[in-house]
Length: 194
Image (cartoon, rainbow, N blue to C red; front, top):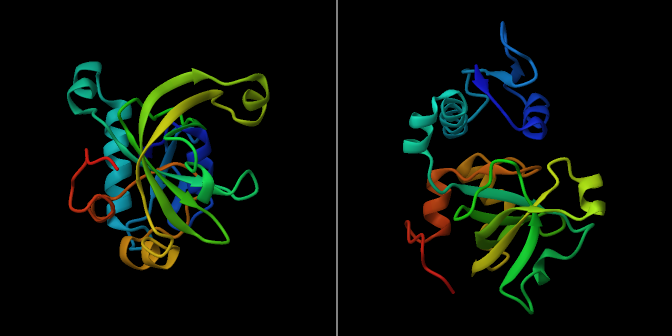
């Protein structure tokens, strides 16, 4: 059983194979993960880590929390993600409740290209959204993303993410597995900027 504080992620996980409402726990914020191989071990470890942070005391959390690495979807029905940074180094983006300043966000462009396009750093978080954004996005907060790296469309396609890193789909914000992070950053060069 793991605690999932983000209600959007919680609902999304329950629709996937290997995730169930938690037995004897609050079904609104806890889920059970099958240990039968249907969920990749790297994903289970990420959720265990996050669950520990969500239930740890204030001092424990402060000592364990640090910048995180996120994979965020970018849908074509809003705008063509290939042009997000054509004329600027920073963009404003809807923010998941758990994202903080200094975290890194990798933007995944959905169909029709289905690949990771950008590596960004969160330079500002918890900014208020305008009224229209608050209506369509439950958290109602925005963040500023600064471009660190642009990837060719064939560098991290969906097939590679599925085959090598167990990422079947990117429907909402999720942590980046350590192995994928290393590949995306050239073996851990976290601060290299373009």
